[in-house]
Image (cartoon, rainbow, N blue to C red):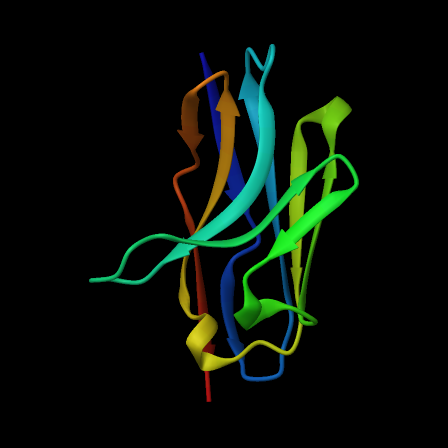
Length: 114
């Protein structure tokens, strides 16, 4: 059994920064921790950023402001979020997979005030 533990969320003013971290706890054999998603009430969960090896991909809305990084050996990923905007307010989820099975963290809240 493996679970993802996120940390680093909080409340900031627009223009501020936060760093989210995600770590796998438990049996992480064949686990691939690969991305961050976010969701606001009433909307679908959306991809924020993902990483595979040295390749990264970002939602257009966060390009140039967010940076994802990862350590495959430690099964951890991080998301550095700069120049935060009120529209970045959401519950942020860490995502991983084992084969075809998706694994999600419990989510960490990011709130940005104007």
